[in-house]
Image (cartoon, rainbow, N blue to C red; front, side, top):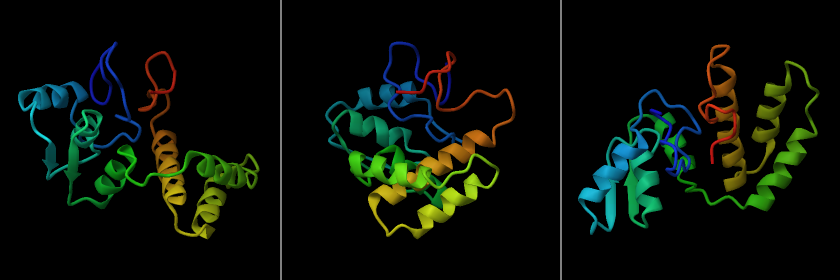
Length: 157
């Protein structure tokens, strides 16, 4: 295992959903947080895709992150589910967007246009993140493993 994967038997959480150019291995963060067990909050001034934030939240700590990269902020925000999208509403909107697809090369643009037409909401933002993840995976070189799948091809939990 290695970034962004957690080793067998360890919680994967949302690490690696969007493969970011730099990132911290989840086990490194867990070990760092074990050094300060009484800390109630964590500040990560270079949060990247949010590994420290994810792990702090998983341990019940308040986490705050920032980064100079807008992409990093977008990814870490969604890795931490900071938008609080309603899952039922998210699925209903996704189903409506999927109805517009034709199974051809224009589908990516159809999805983009459908999402742009939606009113601002946590669900629209979550679907924009899902599109970013899909495009990130689609752009991977042929034969490269998906950052969101384990070596057996199952989706990350």
